[in-house]
Image (tube, rainbow, N blue to C red; front, side, top):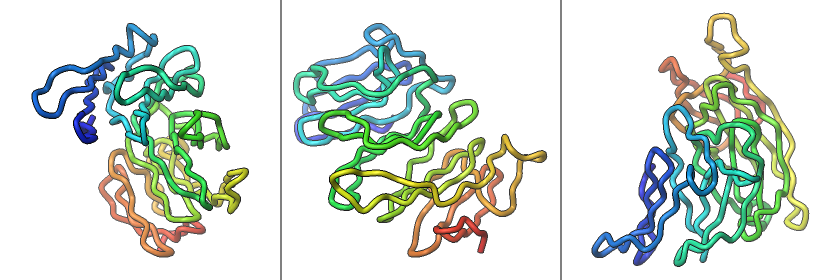
Length: 228
């Protein structure tokens, strides 16, 4: 995972689920967490790779722990737990959490192999959740936000776009379209969408540009998923 730097501290996560808060000047360990020992995390096949996210006094991380600790927020200075959210009945996946501003409300977008979830970043309370199964738990690409839309893509689960509700008091989302994933196709290639393994697509206006797992560059309409 990419190190996360925040003022006097740098946060690093190892592939086996060891999170360290280090002094940025001398590398001294300020606090640490062992996901497997402390939270019973089942490390995914390719290791933990989702970098922690700093939000005010919180350090938000994909932990994949139990009970109900798929995502957790720690005090970034002390390492004390602030909140935990979502069941870890499936492996944690790989995607980086992100905070967006949708209709004036801060939402923590937590994309994992069972769903795209939106959480209150302060409390961990769930705003909304759209089921989206990703076979083998492989979802390393980051979700992409272009208000009022949110796009995710994976090789086995396919790509989809959500429309975010314009209501900061009661955030919600609806599915606009969903393309076929490799698991849905006889030959593993759908020429009318893209199924990215690693790379994160780009939204530019009404269009999405991205590479699929076969190295093909495609352009789709953001609102329909139709190939241009």
